[in-house]
Amino acid sequence: MSRAPQNILVPFRRDRKRDFASGTGDELLASKVRQVLLTEGATPHSTGELPWRTSFGAGLSRLRHQRNDTVLAELVRVYVRDTLARWLPGVQLVQVDVKQDREALAVRLRIQEGTTTARLVIPFRHEA
Image (cartoon, rainbow, N blue to C red):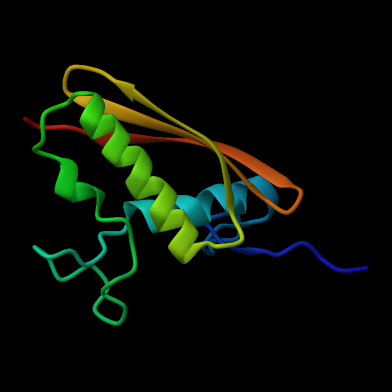
């Protein structure tokens, strides 16, 4: 019988044993997706957040000072889709919904990896 994968959760937090919290299943899947999407990858205008792997991440910050309209929502959708396909090829993007507000976007995702399904919301603060 194989054991479910277990790993450290992002954002880092402590557990009851004073160690970094770890998780499995949907909690771990959501953590992996959040890590990829919120890490700033290299773009033509930036060098990336991780010095040892500059291209890792989504580059969503490039969209921060753009007009908050349907074009921006579609760009966010495309960035999310392409980033997950590149960095987490085993994860299937089941649904992505971008909810727009005056100064913010909320990206709602439903993702699947094997038999594990997770839902998460990533707030994306927009500053015009």
